[in-house]
Length: 144
Image (cartoon, rainbow, N blue to C red):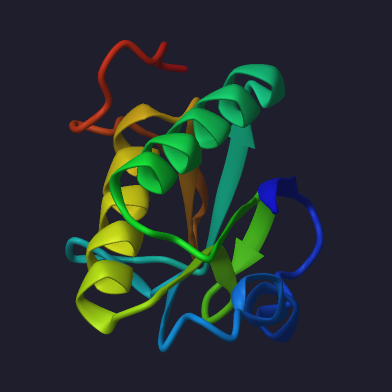
């Protein structure tokens, strides 16, 4: 499972997608919307994407992880739309025979999706929608 959704992320479904009898290490990363961006108060984040580009890049990242680590399963899901503080914006879960491999693979996927996927975010403050946040890690991704 690799993709984008406007729906809340179902953590149990993500875990069930990757659990395998031969995999003792299952690592789950959830990126949730926090109430501060730097020193500015945040009430929500808004995510948009170029769906086709983002889906292709998420799939490529997942394929790279599977080629580098002995993964039993991998699920990557990024939410789009307006997401309030405390809700999940991104979920990555991976299973491998051992924990160190699972941690490394999931960290790789999270770092690469933030760097490469055509997904943009806007901070919403108590004063209204702010500006689109430029991802300083992004490489070759158009900015809004």
